[in-house]
Image (cartoon, rainbow over all chains, first blue to last red; front, side, top):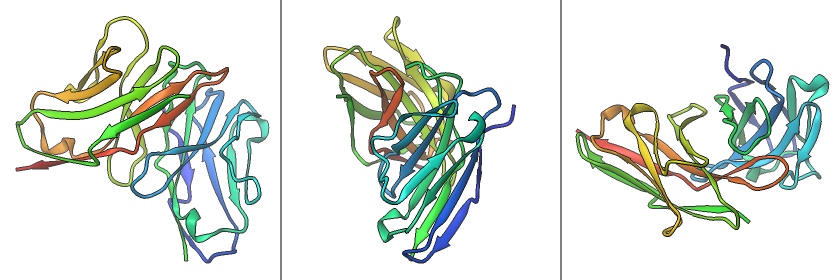
Length: 115
Length: 114
């Protein structure tokens, strides 16, 4: 079974530029998550999709971050414009459903460096 | 609201020694608890989880954790450390809402001395 795929693995941009990350979840997984992991911290949930609908985006900085999951499969996360403090690893995860005991499977992440 | 606190950002043990990584949680409802492991430049992998039932949970790679409600703890242990156990470990709690939201602790980096 293929895992969660993310691209690119690494990205370096200058502040005020825009960037986009892509995630392909495990086939059949209805729930998709985007997490931000700043160095030395645990992952923080940015947004959660159930199929193509948003169920939680309470910690997404909506003035600069956006995400979509068209057709309920792949997802993209965009930052525009980027700030220095956005430097982090962006993790995508997916799970079969949104139940509390459902295991989330994580991709390898995209490491973003904003200079 | 749910939260987790991991005591000790870095733990170092000798190969073959006991591994003990501490996690305390806060939850207004019965918690669902998880331990994840993250190897360098990798995503997170589930080690084990507690939902209901038996309070001693066994996971992969010889790890286990015990849910202690009276102490609000979910510490991770392994009887004998191996060099391959060196990684970052995250304790997490599943938030109680209509949709699951996993809240992670700040992590504990485990180093293994030869």
